[in-house]
Length: 402
Ligand code: PMT
Image (cartoon, rainbow, N blue to C red; front, side):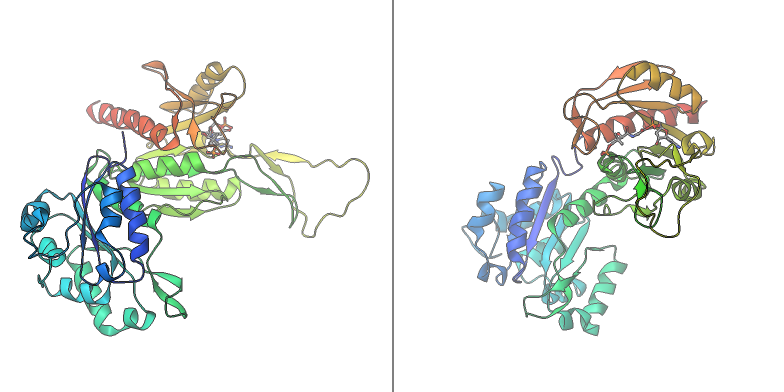
């Protein structure tokens, strides 16, 4: 299943802020995701950036002046409004937020938004004082109450040279927010999915840990795919260098014991548990309070077994495990399927090229009791996430029928 943006009709409203340059990147990323992007530029925005930039990136006409007789789309802005699946205004100035809050329609963008019933998201960008001004805050509250999604703003360097709140959020965050909105009515709507990610870090002393090569990419991709199908997602992650996915409740943990506690808590109202994390099987028996000094030629650390989170997780959640193997892949996956009492095991061939730890793609086999083994081609981790979730949806509806 592709991203919810693929094939969708997106209106990108661009208003007059220096952050307009990021809107060009946004138009490009949305187009790359397979969306049909119709850009509407306000008069203010066209002082910063030209229609040609967007036309070149989206391969579609750009709407500017509502009353331009040469512009086919301007005349048809109501049709445009009605065929939109989603509208995003990025950057959104204080002025356009005020107009939207008051239902004004004096240009192509605000008239189109007023004529549309598509979900609306705005990504504010402005000077910090303009943002914190009670007038702007009141306008944002009004929009929020009406169901408009407010994305950001972020804190940091502002065009005024000052630091503060008011920066347009980064483009990937906007793209993810749109996926989350578009996915709301997906086949996992109303379901609560718990995902684990990353490699746990078991401390030896204040400096050293026992960990593994998991980057978290697989677990994060499963969480994003579940979110994009409408699930309420809680992700429990061991340390990674990845940003928290938008629209996913992310719980950061270090050790296997911390991961177990967070997962069991999340499972209390969960429907599905997907364990993509590489959990350390053992941890040091004791953790030194001070850094251990270098000594003789050899050093042994006594280890004790960690709990098996997947096996011990409450049986009422549908459990999906991963088995990362370097040999006897399917045999080991089948053994773990039974031993851990899971409905589906994702056998992960970590010896295949571009598969396993730290890469963006994965080569897996889906192993279950009913259907045996399904081999998947090398796919992006996000697509692997969707193929797992296709099975989860089937298993959930089968268990609802039985
Ligand atoms: O994070 P990436 O860099 O993207 O890499 C992805 C991955 C290779 C880590 C991922 O695709 C993967 O295969 N994860 C499982 C890693 C693993 O080693 O699993 P395992 O065979 O040790 O354990 C089997 C299952 O039991 C797993 O679902 C694991 O999360 C779970 N487990 C293991 C030990 C333990 N104490 N508790 C557990 O719940």
